[in-house]
Image 1: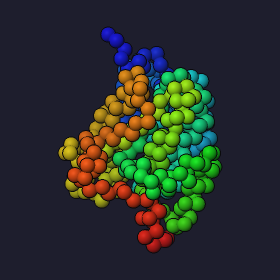
Image 2 (image 1 turned 90 degrees about the horizontal axis):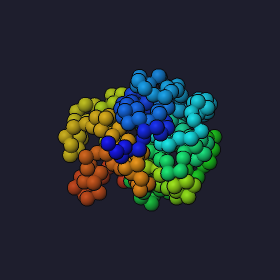
Image 3 (image 1 turned 180 degrees about the horizontal axis):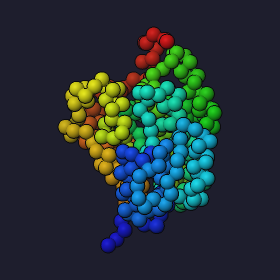
Image 4 (image 1 turned 60 degrees about the vertical axis):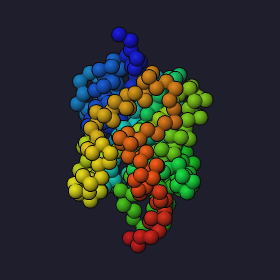
Length: 292
């Protein structure tokens, strides 16, 4: 049987490997023969990983300690970990969902990903419309920042103009930032070693964060009223399968993809068949709200 995915004997790194789609992805990669370095704040409960590493993506020092335990050559990286922002600050949400991923890439992956390797990040359909001119302009002030400290400072300066901003608004901004930054990195990573970079944009998924997203949307009735064309929530394994594809040899000519894994909900919005509720800049929304 041919190894179409090409993971056998390869080194893969997965963040958020202890639950949800990260755990499901780790199980798939182990089954496909990859040597998986599984990162999370708690020990990932997946048998057969090469190494389980405790890491807090909200801490630069913790990330540095984690990558000291990871091989110098990596074939595939999957940035799955994220937080909803419902019970987190604006800064913490941006830090875990965007700053940490950019820092990991700049500080480690550009040196360690092998020729033709891949980076795949989990974004969100909450980060749609990142490509529109007004939203791109809002995002550029962040992606131009180079260091961890510069990114933290840019986030704090943005928030200062509006008082305390809810972490859930940070979720939307962080996912738009991730989408925009992935697009920006296609050329540099291709020129470096023909490295591919892609993102998945999941719809609402049955995972450990589902209660928080349900709270964000206003309760179960609101969730059930907005299930999209599939008529149900996605399962973590369904998201993991797409991640495994994008990081594999099957997707060897795929880079810069922002794959909405939502059973066509975004396509229907683009076609005008469903209302588009995300065509706004964060600054415009916050400027209409009273400051704290």
